[in-house]
Image (tube, rainbow, N blue to C red):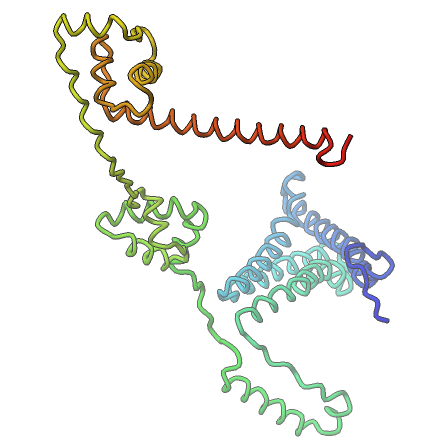
Amino acid sequence: MTTTQDTSRFNWPFAVQPARIAWHIAMLIVRPAAAGMAGWSLYVVARQYGVPWFLALFAVAVFDGVGLGCLYQATEAVKAGRSAAIAILATLGMAGVSVTLNVQHAHLIHGGHPAEIMFSTPAVGLLILSALSWSAIRAEARAARGETPMRLPAYGLWGWLLAPQQAAESLQKRAVTHVTSGASVPHPPASARTVEDDIAAEFAEIGPAAAIQRVAALNTGATDTEVAEILANYRVTVTPAQVALLLERAAVPRVTLDRVPRPPIAPAPALNAQMRSECTANAPQVKGMTKADAIITMAEHLGGLDTPAEAIAIALAKQDVAADTAYIRGRISLTKRKAAQAAQEAAAQTEQQRAEYERRNGNGGYA
């Protein structure tokens, strides 16, 4: 059975590394102590030369602080792929000035060599600890660029004592092989960033839509495909269809409806006064009804729903109700369908009632 450790919870007894804790505690103690001793020594020297006390307090910042700053800049130069020689030389120069002043402090109190060592060691130790702390950062930066430094072979103390010449020759051969094999990049470029990288970073920040608008504005005659190809050079992946949509150049489909032309309205027959009086004498008065009700009423008066539409139109025209024959046929057809549907429903209801009656009166054996 295999068990896996839950990494979502912090396991205090095993996650904390005692060595790292001891290192940070030592640095918290040593660095302030070293800076304080070096600062006191430089303060005494500054006061000896007539520097006001409030300015002499900053003596350690002027010398050891500048040295630490130069050492930090050396680390940043290595991370950026630049030469750190100037920064390292400046660090050594500031450290030399600080040590010289510490030695001068020993001379002022006539302490001899022990005093010189005691006063100069804190500044040197502070710079050495800082250099060692940042050496891992510099090594990681070099490894990221493909630089592979040569490692010294582990011959051991007895190897160097018993075969010093052979060990030295082997070390020399190894160094020659490392230098001539091209395993390390001796002079990496200071910066591999190009203008395309800067434009790509800006486009990534403003988004694809704004990038399309900007490229299209600078290339007024470019097609959607050309705009997409230009953006692809700056790592913005879009299709020509997306470019067209964002630029509002996409073709909008049009839908054309072919409507069936309506038949012309049949003109109402011209009626004289005698025909009006004869037709209105027995015909039902449909004036004031809806046109649909007037058509059905007049059709029933003239003989039913099978009456020709022309005859119904003439009869309606005698009462000043205008209706074209196509509309009359449509209304009569709809009325017929409704009548047929009503007849079917009535027949079905009658059949249901008959079956229910027979069931209840002994035909089905039910009481």
